[in-house]
Length: 368
Ligand SMILES: *Cc1c(COP(=O)(O)O)cnc(C)c1O
Image 1: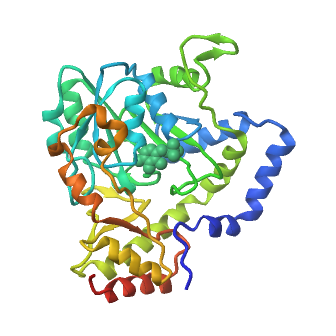
Image 2: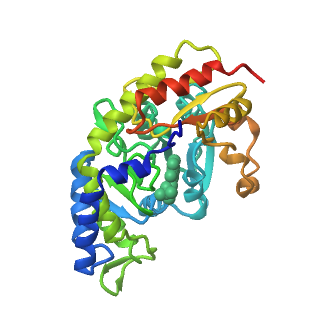
């Protein structure tokens, strides 16, 4: 049995006709950057997420950079963030000259430990950038209230959480600014790079709109120093098609995750990610912990089961951040988890038979 890790090709083949039609429409229009498809996508995204505004951009990383720029984040500002995420969450902060202040994670949810946020706040703190890792959303109620008390912005790196919910609201509509990514392997992926920014404050609209295209408020009139982070029309057209059936994809992902949970929950060798209270995850990754991770994934490989490690190194331990000299106590739980974590195949096209086979192979594995 050859098992597909992310189901990207299966999804394309299932919806091939509609996607080809949309691509052809863009080719015929010869409008390749922004344009009607992008406008339509922003409207569709906004309606889906429930935020007042949605602006697309070139990828999930530029979405973070543009959001921080729009809030006026600059050199020497401090931004509190999680020590365990994809590198880009903290990279976006540092690339603007600001300082990421790393907070350790809760080892059960793999998310920023909100009980440790207050002690990380200083006079220089401007914002808290949380990450909804693998689609699990942190305790936003608590985090928003801390931010309110100290006059900070809250940003959600929702690169992995498109479609996830918290207290009945969608990821993207839970704090000041949220971002997402349409990288092909994300729950809503395009056929290249893409991203989006969600917010409710009208004042941010013009600024983000301008910043993503060289700070222009109209052609060749540059109000700000911006970047080039526009979305192209082909990706927007593909996303308009994929968004039209995304609810079904999401539901199947959630059902498949539930099947894994049921089959693995009482198995002592495996620890499952605890989904936070009030959150309905989109299971962007089905990441689990095992003390024998490396030998288990080697065993699964012999059974044709692909796995991946999200992520092998805590962000503060990356060489690129060695200049910060972050003390180990700020990422000790993250460190522990990077040694045990790995992700199983999860997507809408995974069959019951495949899930049964994968979980049986895991249970069959006998240590080192
Ligand atoms: C994928 C990802 C990003 C970056 O998105 P790109 O579209 O690849 O730039 C940022 N943060 C997290 C948590 C991600 O998973």
